[in-house]
Image (cartoon, rainbow, N blue to C red; front, side, top):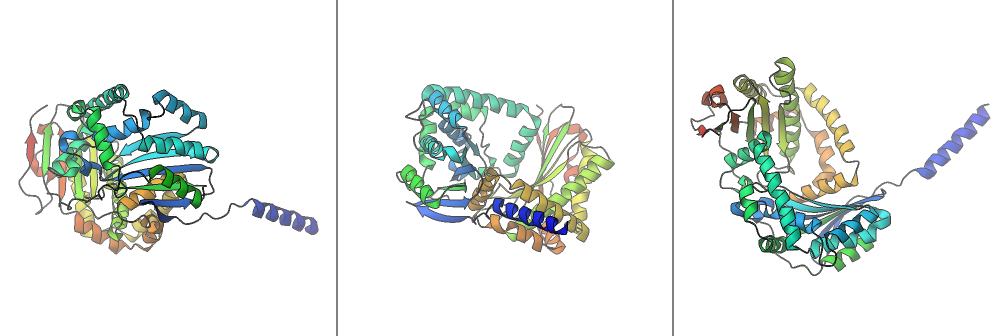
Length: 446
């Protein structure tokens, strides 16, 4: 019997070894005709590609906010010079490929996800959309109309309005005060000629780079990138504006609604810095504290939150949020919790528990090639894609002293925006002891 058992175990081991996937290679970068490429080989059959454009809100004026989001939308959904919208969409559907775009405060990107079997066909469609978008006037008008409708819905949504207003209040006169998806007013004024011209102005080798995660060869990728993008101009390198320190103030917008909305913005370190990693964990622990104190114990809100806006690269910040029918008590609890961390710090147990959960959730989140390509790309916009690879080791090295130091350093100045009944709060409700000047603003009733 032992003999047979050993034989079976040996067979299983051999079979298992035969089917074990080879370890994935580390990502690397190289230049192809002036275009930076970040390439991470993968054994998975799904290939993820992202074409990043640096700058985001720095690439356009306040009057033209939303122009880049609309430009990328038209480029990816409006057809190319060789294929109209219908023919292009049909070609993508035949091979199961998706192409899309997104915009943010500091960058925009055009993405593609395809199956390895149809890599060649998908790349041709993808690169054609980037280099040769049609910007057909009829298709432009249709997509512009949809963008205007989305902007109207966003302005009517209290949460979206609060998010936009908090950025405009905190970063008045700066790039982050621009709404990257655009407003009804800004979008309605845009013409197809303006949008096409803007797209051409940001499509430059010094301002763009490509991230590819998938089961392809480096030689094949280099050939494809060269053939597709060697003709685009050098353009200008993105120059970020100087970081601004947020002022401790509150802006109250009076609105007769059943639920009141509050959002606070606090300065934070850059995502690629060691302090940035510490701030990520610090705000995650504080999120749990907010949940316990505001929802579980007092039922003041269904979903209070604390977050670190790691996608805000030029001027990173952390956020505090709550929607509640009792804003006065909610603010008191929020400020008390912030001050408690400043004065007493986090505990060793909180950090230990958070590390264990954070590492698990990070690896689960990085299971797809699409997520990996986005992580590599955003870290490159922040200065160095290699920080994505060293992130977990940085998390493991963090001490509770690191978390306490970074939170104490940045938490002295919170810029609050309130949307709701003016009578339900007073300017004193937003003050942090000895740190909050008398500069509360009150907006007209809406």
